[in-house]
Length: 366
Image (cartoon, rainbow, N blue to C red; front, top):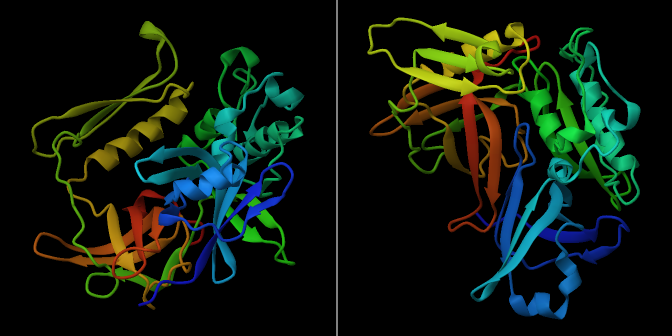
């Protein structure tokens, strides 16, 4: 199969000036991530960069991947460096920007504190604050999604204090890390005129993605390597101790445990942002359920075929997966939590798909 046509574009983040329309990037890898920015990496000729150093100015250059005239990925260049006879690039999508922004005014410039606030709205407040400051706007649009997952009570309001020194990105990570919290991912598309990229934070409630009956991942069809399936006693535990906010004997603690005829193994999991036991308990139970599994198909590598064409699935989707090899015989639903496209892989384009058990998530109407 011949590689799908693609091109790499770069743009100044503030002015919108196009810097390159077909950057010759080699060894390209890019992809999305659930509740994270995803990443891009590749290499360039040092001679090209030495002649045009403004093509990739780290921290202020946007980079995009266009396939078949559709933008499939967009983000900010963060690191460029010479390495031997090549020049390496590393980038991450839009939510990575908030790891370099802080709440200098407190409460996102007066938008907080929050009581029984929709987590989706607090995420929008964080982006609104970040992009209201001079030279701080990426033009990112955050979905208007509404959820019933809330933060803050009259007794313990949700605060963002300037003296905490937390990146805004860390605060958003806290908002999406609780059990039954909204999901997000970063997306980029052309506008209707195909002249301006639309940078978007896609919010999902009760979750992103859908159960997909139209595509599948299968050994001998589109899965091209035998996946590693780890069986690790180091990761296994029937007893999980969840520790939340507080110090000493005042620290919040929940224990989730069962007996199952195996030697007792315990694990301590820190949830430092969790202030109440009613939130800590389901987080601890979910971690215990995850650690009860020995052997899991967590990553596969696929080719671009009609069984699951590249671009047909998205982060959050559940895809029926069949893995059959000398060591593994697995059939079931797996949820996509991330993916990396390698368009120039030997033998044709490849996608590395990160997976988790689909039944670990709640389904809205599915």
